[in-house]
Amino acid sequence: MIYIFLLAVFTLTVFMYIEAHRNSVSLDTINIDKLPGSFKNFKIFFISDIHRRTISKKLIEIAGKADIVIIGGDLVEKGVTMDRVEDNIKMLSKIGPVHFVWGNNDYDVDITLLKNTILNNGAIILDNTNISLKRNNEVLDIAGINDLSFGRDRLEDAVRNCSSSCRILISHNPDISRKIREEYQVRLVLSGHTHGGQIRLGPLGIAKRGGWYDEGYYKLLVSNGFGATHMPLRLGAPCEAHLITLG
Image (tube, rainbow, N blue to C red):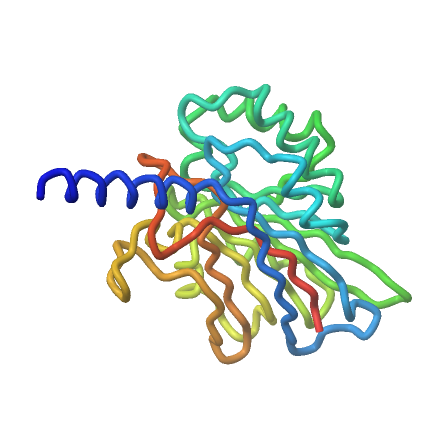
């Protein structure tokens, strides 16, 4: 009986390890309000919570090309080298231009060194700021905020200079939902942080389940994330990145 139990534990552990190391890309087409016609079929590659993982050629091949790449925080954690950060950004840049927002674990390392590594490899940091993308005299705003965990988020600053009525907000932590007001004209929020609970037993998990949520005047994505922290294991919340097509 003990051997059967040990075999079951071993098999489950192997399965959980595989679930935490997949190169899975979720393909989503999302209809959002006020989207300018010129941005129909605009593609966003969103990846959060990379932590210790290495971006592989296989992931790049699966993702293909996108109009923009967004790293939704936790690019690193304690112990991750800047060489790995550099390699990961270079790989992601093969998909499209890379943008980054801060997550809580990004503060585990030398922030100045991490910031310089990101910028020196051609990525843009959205730190309570936004960018305005233009097509055929139409505008789509993408705003990014710093992480909520340390009180560094400034949502009003992030959307202050937006010029369109269609704004996409990037926040590592989905709890930003508590601070979004309708007048901010946010139509889509992309977040991670929770890992979908990382290890779930059916409906039970230690954090918010990954998936899409309809928040009324905007849609919210809570990604399971690409990596894992503490333990490189997952159950009921497999790792994922996202290729999102706007409609």
